[in-house]
Length: 169
Image 1 (cartoon, rainbow, N blue to C red):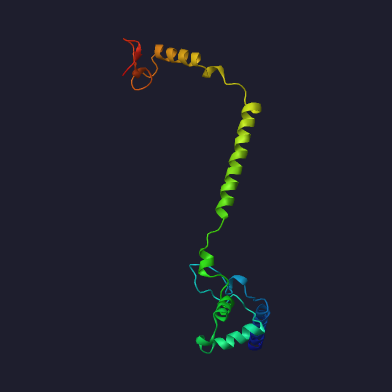
Image 2: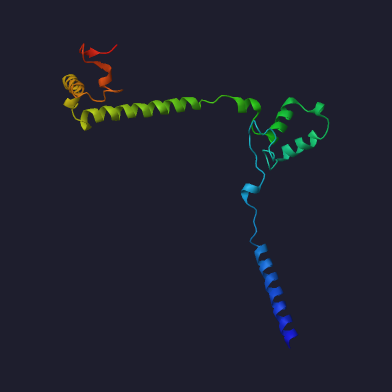
């Protein structure tokens, strides 16, 4: 009785495990980032796959002709074979772009807008310059600090000659 009960539990476990494994087999799919891709880059001269994945009848005939001697191929046929495999040549990849013009233009535009915001803030947001920044006020404040002998060892008052009543040289 015990052995039959044990065998039935083991059998159920084996069936349930195999059913789970079969159920997961349908879930597995290939992610797009794990597939080979075509990229035109100078650092990667030979991409994983060819640029053209589905060939026309003319391209298939050209690929068959490629298997023979290359002396029989014309320059245009060689270029067509190259374009089947690659999208851009090294000359195309190394060609300078006009992107710098866009970047400089955008930067100058943003700087101009910032200048307008600063001018607008000075005119409408900020008030007048405080009276404490006037030359008379600063001179009076400096005289007051010297009279009080503020920081006489290494600071402000240490640079004032009290005998001659002028700044030390």
